[in-house]
Image 1 (cartoon, rainbow, N blue to C red):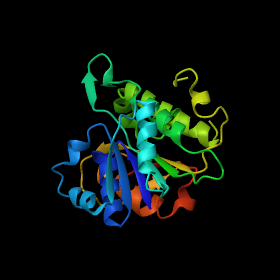
Image 2 (image 1 turned 180 degrees about the vertical axis):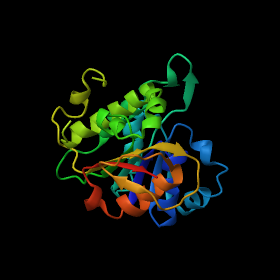
Image 3 (image 1 turned 60 degrees about the horizontal axis):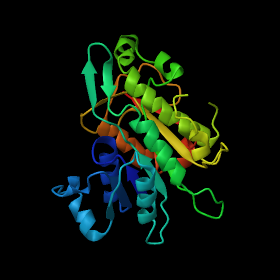
Image 4 (image 1 turned 60 degrees about the vertical axis):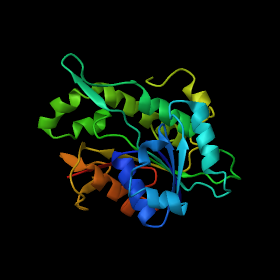
Length: 256
């Protein structure tokens, strides 16, 4: 399998990509700074073997995403899976809670990624996995543990960005569904339902804990507290990618 990974220099995307590489797959990383892997002793052997391609590009710049996509497919082997795990560092303020900069990193990036995917029925369209968060919609927020609802209320700014990310995927995939900028539908072709195959992963509060390989997943789960980034990666690699028909077309919560 050939993977195009956006936002995978660290955390969930990194752990997912590394596991996929160890399973024999290839990964094309789009990175603002490809030198971030220069001293990575786990990634470098795969660079040397040709299983990793490092492509410079900013996910917020459509032309750079388009160029990265073209480079990822330049060898004539089509990309099978697009993995979008992008997310900025967050800063806490007393007046606004957790904030991000730029405010629209996730929503702008997913628009750029979706806009470069093939729509011609004669071309292979890749599957898409995007990682957002539990609590970004009213429905998923209602399922949070009571004590966590106050904490998640302070994540309003980053969650608004994640919600925009989800809306773009929902519309493109034709799933039931103002945050996104004017003209965003036209950028995605103007007609909903063109994206054939996608999964949204909604982790609860992320931690840097170990991989347990034991967690709860589902569309309508409540009472989830936390999940390690390594276990989200485990779910993506060992369940979603191997049991695609089970998860295709779903927005899946994951947590302990």
